[in-house]
Length: 144
Image 1 (tube, rainbow, N blue to C red):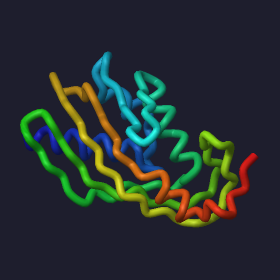
Image 2: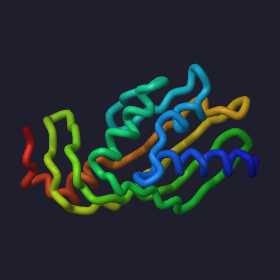
Image 3: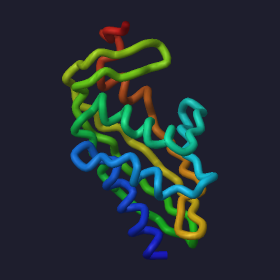
Image 4: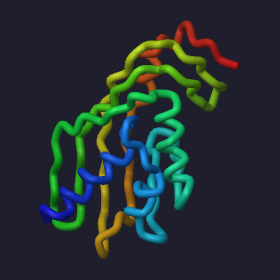
């Protein structure tokens, strides 16, 4: 069980702005493994998982996930985290593209992982995009 915690901690290092490595991030998933963005209902498989992580890092080049609490129960790992960063790149939204605001975000997230055979079979990401948009000043958003 401790190995599962170490495994997930390592996963997060590949998603950091300074150490971004989407290939290594994706390699930690099983062939059928997926990431589900609960807020949008979008399920990512394979390379699309890495593309999603890279997209956030392009918008927030200094993106960092503060791991607040980690709970392990057999092959399930739950992580309470805060995504922090400075909005320096374009952020793709369903409503358009948000140009850099220079503002910082501190968004609460809960990630739930299921592991099997040393790989992630599912990653459910419960995030709050409304909090991020509020912090970026959604009333004054410059969309294109």
